[in-house]
Structures are given as C-alpha cells and as structure tokens.
Length: 270
Image (cartoon, rainbow, N blue to C red):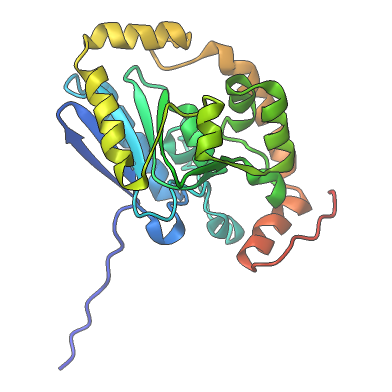
C-alpha cells in the first residue's frame, strides 16, 4: 500500500535571535525571495516582537539562498490577482517592513540582487552590508508599475538627485561597488561573508547602551516613539495619490503579464 504524504511548504520568513540580534531571513529562494502575503505577515510580526523585547537590540534582515536578497513583490502572484499586502496591515507596507518603523536599529544583509522592492527594503533599513554579487535598482517602470514602497522619495533623499532620477526613470540597476561609492550601503564583502559581516556590525551596535542607541536613531530620522516619521509624510502622500491610477492601468496589467510570459511588454500608455 502506498501512503501519500502532503508536502508542507516552508515558512516564507524565518526568525532567530542571537545574542541580542534578531535575524529575519526572507525564505522563498525558489522565487528569489519575492514578497508574498505570508512573508508580509511573518516579517511584520517579527519586527513587532523585536520592538517589544528589550533583549533584542538590533535587527538584521537577509535573504535565503544565493540567488537574490529580494526580487520585490511577487509579480506572478500579482498576475494571478493575489494580494501582496495583507488587509489591515497596509501601513506596514511591503514585507511588513518598509513602513514599519521601530526604535531598534535595522541592518540589511544583502546576500544578492536586491531589485525593486528589494532595494526598497534596503532603503527602509538604517544600515546595509552588501555581497559583492548584489545589485540595486528600481525597475518598476519596466513593468508599468510604481516604486510604491517608499523607493521613489527615499532614493532621491539618499543619493545625489541626478543619480537617483536616472535610476528611477531608466529602471536600470547598479552594482554593489557603485552602491558603496554612492553611500547607498555601508560595506561590500564577499558573498559568503555578508551575514557574518552584518552580524559583526550589529554586535558592535548591540554592545552600546540600548536607550542611547535608540534615541540617536529617533533623533537622526525625526522618528516618533510609535515609529512614525513625519518628514516622510509628503512622500507617502504623493505615493498613495499616484499609485492607484497606475495600479489600475492597462500597462500595470501588461507589465507583470509580460514578465510571467517572458516576453517584452507592449505599452498602451493607459
């Protein structure tokens, strides 16, 4: 007699606490760690846990596998009409992370390409350590979409305006070395060292007085105790104003469809 066993998919994100450092791992390597609804829930819950646990002093976000840090939103899921952001958690944004401000420092350990939402996760982090294989960019315009997870206004705030505008309008990517030269990341290390390097940086921070570290973060980012950042309100307002019309456009449907079908999109401009 043959007994059939049901295959249970691994969780979309993993959490581990090491010596006061919470490591959150995006865990969909078969999809280049693209963000789906489950990942948003798991990462968002982990950040809440980190904020509430005084034993956690730093959060490190990384990706599983060696193919990508994060490929952004799961375009195949979008093309199937699936939700990416869980209902009721819209404020936390992509991966439950980009709009989820916490008082603890956050470090992105970028283990590979970080395109689209992947770059937005990096921009939402306080610090970043990148593998030498990493690439960064916001290719949404190549898919008929908008960098709606804070990328447009955070990139222009982080990089020289002319550089940021070129990346936003062309959708082209930059290498890890270019990102380091532009101060988008703090360190670039060999790919097999990226998590260790991020943990070393996190340990240096965790060894300091936690309340003073958190105060410095809040002062530097003009961040309120609840995680809100008033200086970003205008950027989010503009994003939310423009995003719905783009999301409903024919081009926004064509972009993910063409991606899923592995062909060039045919834009209609409507």
